[in-house]
Image 1 (tube, rainbow, N blue to C red):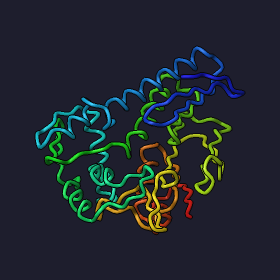
Image 2: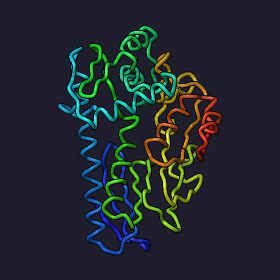
Image 3: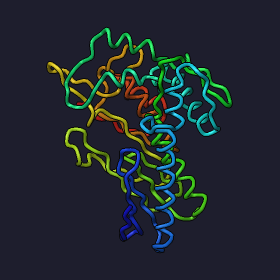
Image 4: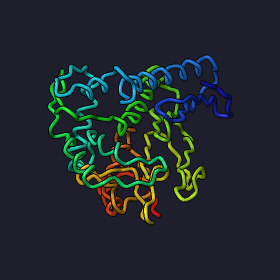
Amino acid sequence: MSLQTRPWGFLGSFNAMASPCELLMAVNDEHVARQMLNIAYDEAKRIENKFSRFIEGNVVWQLNHAQGDTTVIDAETLHLFTFAKQCFQLSETAFDISACPLMALWRFDGSHCVPLQTEIDKALDQVGFERITLTNTSVHMPAGMSVDFGGIGKEYAVDRTANILAQRWPDTSVLVNFGGDIACPVSKADGWQVGIENPQKLDNAAALLTIRQGALATSGNTRRYIEVNGKRYGHIINPQNGYPIEQAPLSVTVLAPNCVMAGMLATMSMLKGPDAEAFLQQQGVDFKVFRG
């Protein structure tokens, strides 16, 4: 972790959830700033350790290795599953946290290989949130099914961190930024300046937004894609046919009251492909869409 002074207060930074994380704090007291940074780091790491599917022994690992047995879960895990179910229903089954077998097939690591249709068909047999049985205390998934909270976990961590800080310091404006997913729970009169990355020219801001209060999330194919025979395949997979979404934007940024909602709408709009803009207009939120 690092803490640096700025004209408006302090900038704290660390890495978690495979992302650079920042905390912008409009405070004059370094001791308070360090307290805030420690809280943000601890909460981000707690959620990562609990819900990352790459960490052996945690609740997601147990679910993914249950092989048809029922897994006991706590209230927080139920909360994430319930939200994932809402995403699944609102997206008409396009937003599906059980799409892990498909994501494993499509490797965006420079290999430039398109999976065989037989491989996709086999993976599709293991996908389908509707086959998950959820109660207040347990989850049952068919043998071979696996889930990944990556599509909502980071946004959840942002909101959790922002709310904890706002409850403890209700008069202090803080901007929580975990890998571009952002929340500002306490209003700042002059706002925070946030840059939106240009998909055509990475590491350059294509637009500046002023956030006084609220949240922002971005979904896109800017960095994770492959090109095969002149065709670009982005990393957002359609769980209904097993292929990357056709005619999806390069990136979508959404402003919403909280980060989980912003992230959900950004991802859902990507899943709409050519209809991304129309979908977001129907939701009545501010957004920015980049296309190639």
